[in-house]
Image (cartoon, rainbow, N blue to C red; front, side, top):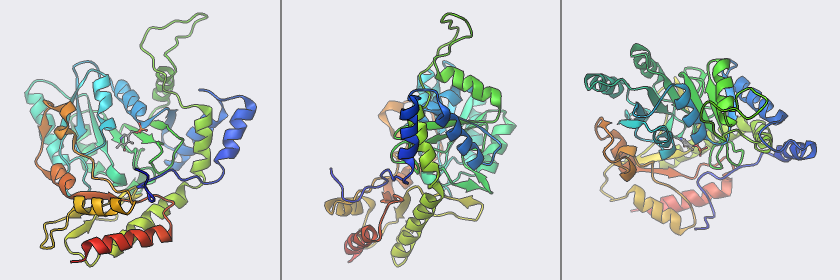
Length: 378
Ligand SMILES: *Cc1c(COP(=O)(O)O)cnc(C)c1O
């Protein structure tokens, strides 16, 4: 469908073409060139200067590389937050490993630290220690990282932070992506910034970065001929895409302010409706970029629902989307162990993601607000 207002479309800042032209003019158009290392440096300094960044072809590729670096192999178990986009979990299958899904907690909608620990204890009892934990900062909301890190350290299991949706979010002043043992970002077209398609792996150590680049560029051993002793991947970001990323980095802060302003707009809009909750930070330790603003419906006399609103918006050419459907409910992952209750499932059943792009205009907001108020009118 051709929507008039889309949920999170790409937003150009203005300088992208300058960098792309430079890539073309210098003929550095493939998997090496100055933009790649400069984009990595931009990201490293944005994330606080303590981490090493590898620019790759997608966020999914970054998760795959993180699993490989964490030592995940065939038949290993990997714990993953159930409430997420499927790309958080697909790379577990690429490795021939087995996903173990865990429920969310109510405050951040992310991996529940208590259920996480119960899961690890039960897997240990069953005779296998999970090889990695994937925690997601869903819709840009930072997870309860201190509690989760404590569990990951106690059992000595590497922690991968999926910050695909959370560039610019922070937890206790530390940027999402730079928390945990590995982090990943996505620059897909619907994310906070885009490189058309792209992603980044964030490592603690430079030797991990070197290893990731080696794996992402077909694992060519040092020799005069083509020598391979391990499986390689074609996962490196192109210099053209990286040039676009450099342009996008210049307007990143403004984009985040815009997304947070959208969230405030919805907070005010839904204020009079006590059966609708706008997903928000529960305390100042969590700073969300509000990549998407999401709402939750509770049962109400007016019989209004997330799917009712989705359809009302759709009829007027306004795109909205359900919350990610939890992985333990997906046919693909049928038979994978799941720990927890119905937090993720209930969020999915009653939730809706609203138009949240950084390019949303005042007239867009007026139109959205008219349609929403009309639908909620009794
Ligand atoms: C978008 C997304 C990914 C995948 O990123 P791509 O760049 O599209 O491969 C992974 N995890 C989450 C939570 C995402 O939203």
